[in-house]
Length: 389
Image 1 (cartoon, rainbow, N blue to C red):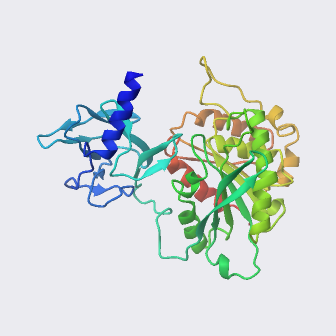
Image 2: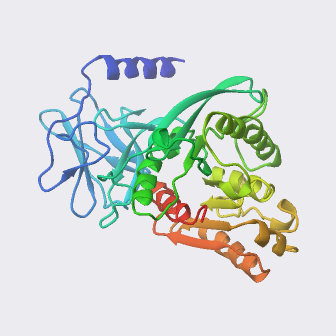
Image 3: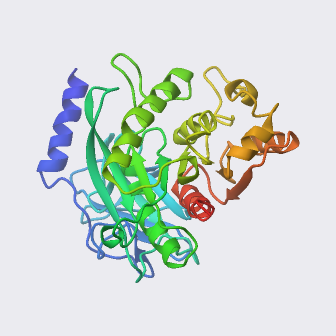
């Protein structure tokens, strides 16, 4: 109890007393991270993609950066703590400051919901990759809405991307991509970290993607007494109910969208990839396009007690291997992707080969990176170009 009280008091000190602060100084030869709150502060990215972190915390006894790897910071005579990390992979990295053993957000960086809590993050640009960079093109909107769920008995948030010109396009109707976040995330993931609007704006301007709505719901769905999320049948069933009974009707009653399977796509990352797999392939009368990004459904994430979980595609989706032609006729695109450094990659490649050996048509892509947003941004960029054509 005393230890917990001390932690609470320390947090109060951190946020309501000048115990620590950001430092207004850019390291020589570096550039400020695009996720910084201010452009005159670190975190600063060096040419080799290592990062300089600085924290002004003169009263702290110990300061660290938790960036999956723990980095010990050193304090100078002015009370400023500094560390330079190893070179980081391009992409989006969550991190925390650890001050006297307490994890807190970095006041120099934006915070994002994506690790089951709000967390600081740094986005490392990838040289030569600009498909998720804002350009001088027509821009769509991310619209944040609320709807009432008769499954959870609560009001729920949803984000909806509408393409450029939607409000001035008269009676024109649009196809819809329903896209799901991963575990520890919610409807903010694809809208913020995933940069969905920028990716779609640029693709549409280039003529590489059809104008479409992208619907980003909260996939953490549960009834009272039930844990939200996961890969089990119960979790997948309640997600399907939420999508079919609440989300899709809300979209089709409030937006000018085309209906029918040929005008609907479903995709998702990690846990959301499992939701897309179950819901899309079990309901090909509703979705003609299914995208599965970096799911652990196929293996690669282990299980309690060690070892790999087994995945029987035929039992999960009857007919997928024994009657693939029925799926080939109904699915215009069945797409799977994964990061090349993700432990999920080998089970995924193996299953894709099994699908192909049994005559099931599947598009497969892999991208440099682990289980993180750079891979998923590239997956959306690739998948969106194959939709509704």
